[in-house]
Image 1 (tube, rainbow, N blue to C red):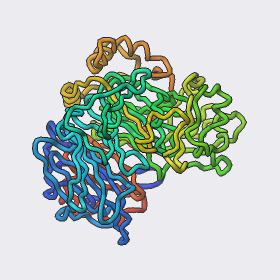
Image 2: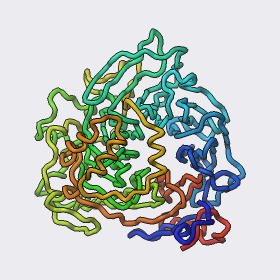
Image 3: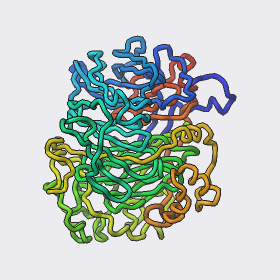
Length: 575
């Protein structure tokens, strides 16, 4: 975050903000960046991303951080709120030629103080498996780009697996890999395994085990991000065609969908209990979707440009009623049986907790607050509270932090879509699968699979839109002008008609049909667009496109002064 230039507006960078918990403070000495601290010229480069892992170091300094800036990849000991960052001593630094790192992910199962498994995706389509502690490069996947030639948009280890990982590309395809398999010397041949509404799953035809195990194609646009549910049983996918699609991971069944108000969806995350999904994108909104009801329950409007990251704060999310422990920990088995549970669908986990009283009109009010945050290309950080007046609109309103339309908030949930159980973050194994329903052969490992994709991408057009995005889009009905822009963003000529069809339905309610959240906090914290938001136990971490990774101490957690010599830090001015 360069401290120079741009006049008064460019220097109005906040270094602290206040919520009901107290004051969050920027720790300027805990900033991570390239060793020279020079702002990175971000024109035309891929977004800066950050990954964390804990290696269970006995010294108590077990956190490790990885981030990419341009062609460079850095790996440091992360000292957080405890000590100032020492940028002169990266554990590992890599500079790539001809391609740039775009995303990365650590495997928490295999991480030790002596070794970590880090997947890195690249702009030319390859995926590298490296160990930055041993400074080794163990494998390169899609090396010849025979599987996919487009940019890697998201890479994740499959939860509970030491060998399976998912890779999404800007081509719209997503692939499942096994680190033990090779990729072959010829382009893979695929055979249709399963087909559903706007998606298909193909298996790789081969006499010997090779990558990829599966290819998914879904929708009509690039897949921008995917996220596993807390228990690893479901996969939420945010696509450039504006659709959120949620799949059962083992059986590759479509659980539910949601359509953005406008444009593509860029980011997605799950609540810690797996009951809610938040997505953000080119409509400048954050949209809250109920997993159980398969419908939009709220939207949040605070950003002035595209929303690039959404994340739940597990430390501030709270349930304040001891009477209903199952409210946030089980699958609503009885609820589904009362609501014509999908015929032929077996449970994927036999250990079900009792019925949640969530939809019971005679249950006592539960004091619930979900905290989530978002950052965007408008350089702003927003924090949001999702409270019981939104979650349980039939109960008396007890909080006033949100603008709610009580008439619309009490509308009945979507029918015919609640055909699966709620993801449960407390269930043990990821390996149990539905009887006869799993698309994965036992040879593919018990953790199974899921993938997501889309058929065509206009990457250069998307990048151009990111640069030119200065609009202030009206949040009323989709006007003819905004419909034209939607048509441009879509990869089909029918996008305009499709938008008109979905607007006002459960896929995409009108603005006045669902509660509109206002942010608790909305602060400009950078000079360049924000690309990272991660909530940790004692801090939250943000990063901008200039390559500065900032640590914000939670109230009472900051051991370092954020006010010392602010002029020496490039991260902003003190307010």
